[in-house]
Length: 104
Image (tube, rainbow, N blue to C red; front, side):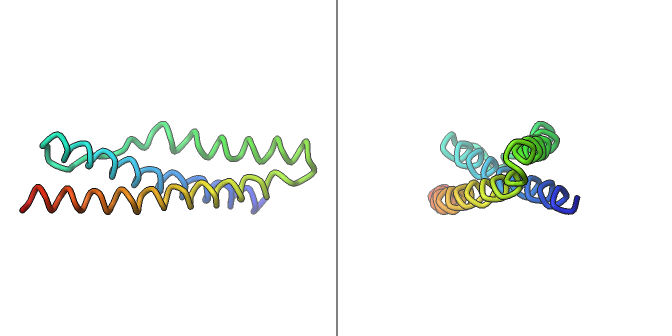
C-alpha cells in the first residue's frame, strides 16, 4: 500500500515540474510579445488527473504483469521528469536572455 502513496507523491512532483515548465514557456511568450512576464499555470486539470492516471496505470499493469506496474510507472516518472527538467533548464536560459534584452 505504501508504494501507491509513493506513486501519488511522484505524480504530484511531476505536476509541479510541469507547472514550472508551463510558467517558463508562458513568460517567454509574454516577453516576445512585449508584455510583463507574469504567466502562471492552472493546477486543476493536472493535479487530480495525473495522480489518477499514474495510479490507474500502475494498478492495471500490476494486474496484468504481476507487480511490474510499479517499476514501469516509476521508470516513466524518472524519464519524463528528466526530460522536463532539461527542457526547463533550456527555457530558463532563454527567459533570462529575453529578460536582459528587455531590461537593457
